Length: 515
Image: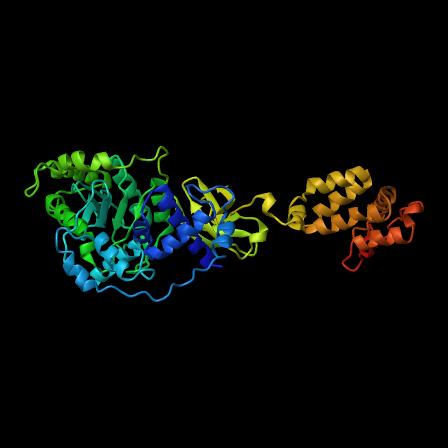
């Protein structure tokens, strides 16, 4: 059960990145850390099913996608001769030669049994990557935003106690222009991490195509060179901004060299200048960081013309995608299990879901005001967020029918039902409800008493209740006995005088003791 949501999330990401973000198969594969051939296979299968746009039609639920995509199996091709990549590498050093020409020559030498051009290029690049050459990265305008945290922290003084609290420094830099953003947050936790991204995008005034973060726990749940798993909250934020996350490989600092240099510059030109200044709030610290950051971005660069700001305005800013119309609201995404009482737990508060989902795994989307619960991509429940610890928020429609009926009982409902039968029955029910510490303890007795009107008749039950009140009988078995023996049809017995009632002695009980 647990593998379906992961498979479905990656499948939807493939379709979103291909049709929603217009990325190539290679770019999609790099973003999701999967094979380009997998992207091609699922893209071809989607085209066969008529899926050529994003967002998906309402007919393509998670269950439908899972069923249709798993119907087909791809047959492996026969063995194809592998080109001599070292020879191709040497030939490519000539100015006039291209991979396209070399592939055509290779296909002519192996007619009917050769790789496609795309696969030929992928194999060559894979071989080239194994040679580990040191190469200079070239960044396209508006393409990549590199993200990391500084190693050192900043101290903030508590004005009441004089104690120090450390703040982390978030850094992001555009690949082409080196335009830099920095701010201080209390932690590197998930909410601080995600909201720093949102403020960075507002600072840039647009969206880059790719986000290149470090393998921080808040961003990457499972750090892996080949298949890193992104935190679902971080991935949900990227989907809102319609951008792509490509985490740097672990222990590969060259993948995020821009971020490493930007962190070093922020540490030297901002944090070092502030080392002797006292700060008493996070806001005060960020105001000073903003001042020095403006100076940093406007300072002339040594090896490139202009400043970071002028380069950004000229190169990156025109290529950035526009920000979404609706502002981003922090939404935490976590997996939850439905308990046996058809409730799930979020921050020690319990929210109901349809009882048919008991013991199922759901995905909770927790925002500031709402808690939404999803099962296989479909929203099954939505509740206002509550901060009451240990309390329950329950929707009546989520309850089984038996629980729903039981939950509808109340003292007022029993009294109204008894009143419809007769005044004596109403009086008897009131006495039964008042006989216990909690009225709920008398519900079963009252229900059993009132149901006698179905077996006998309301008139007979009213007469039996009148006789029970007259004789002091308060047990259900006694009232049923009156009806079974027909005593309700007989006149009420005369009240016998209690000759011992006036005598007060511990051994004298009186005639009411035996009722």
